[in-house]
Image 1: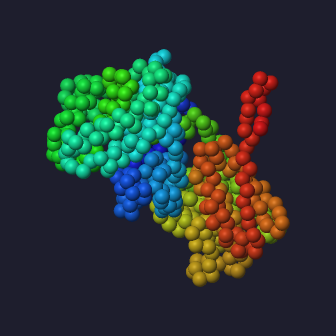
Image 2: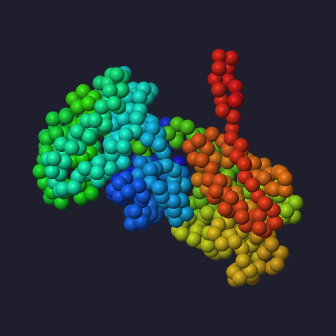
Image 3: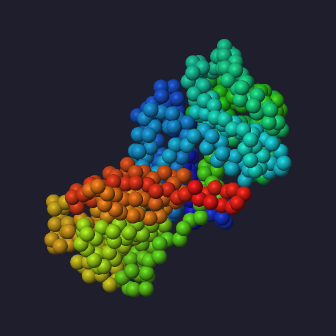
Length: 528
């Protein structure tokens, strides 16, 4: 199984594709990074700039291509400080889903710290020590005191280097007066949190983030130290940090980028990031920082492995020729198996419980199952218009046991699982007999809802129960424990259900039923 983690950071977007090696470990397949700097404007104005949004969407479109070509089965996308705080952050995440196909969610600063702790403990041998973890990002700084098993203290501070750069730096290189003002601000802002840190007695500081990787490379250039190994991160003393800050700030950013082989965007903000680290070292009383290569994206994948047992796909009877032909085509097109089988399961449940509305039988039920398995095979060509690509593949690839008329009917069901609803003006639909057009309308209306219930591809929904309540057709949705990681997008489900309501002349409503919370007591385990 391959999993991808995408970190929508305030400074850069990161992609990590990993091959799962065991239930608790993975091997990196691909790492990509693009400097988007959403936070450069947003952290100052409170809104994401349209040009930054466009640049971010182009980046994610490229990430999507990489995910598809490397046959990734699950993609987890998290957004941090700049998007989390921006007035139009939710709007950006909606566009990410609509235009790029990624179900992205903003996570809190404390959740960032928890995931970073998970990544660090799987990368660095902490022994029995308590350590201070410092993730210095563009929008925020996460500080945690932890050992290999537990976090004792955690806080998220709005001290990211892009935020500080925009507030305190007006000259290039930074004026001495600006450095003094920034240093005093960091000292005052960190006094309280670092007092709490010192009371918990950490003996080491482990720093993460792209700026820290740049710091380590610059430290190696200065002293010729041997390369870092994942089991033993390199250490940079506070004296070295201060010397590197002095070297960097003696030059304009364009010159320092060329001299020290830095990306220009990184060169502009690196002195501020290192001044933040220096202030943390001073306030914590720790003499130097160990630099850890693992960060949020590694923690995202490890957290998925730790908390998720991927369910087996819903069983599909593959004994007959027609079903085997459907599965063969799906596999040849690298279909998202877990998602497609989950959609087939949910679509079947909806079909059975709405027989009084559509009046269809066993033949159409099997057709809906086939359409559910094939609805996303268009990804094999491109995400853009993949519903139309899926129709093309059904019409033109080998499907043993299907007549031409059955193939046309199935292709139309697949084509209308998203975007435009079936219309008589569409030539391919108009070519079908009137009875087949009715079948396409009914089955696509059901498939749209089932697909929306698993839009995240994380199998959050286990069961759908439909009841008539006060004149409404109410869909009761039973979610599982994954809803805590990937909340169900009910707005998206309601939007996709509009065609169902219009077609059958009913008002629809959706209610979530979450699994009971398990509470451990002295008497045993009970559901609450």
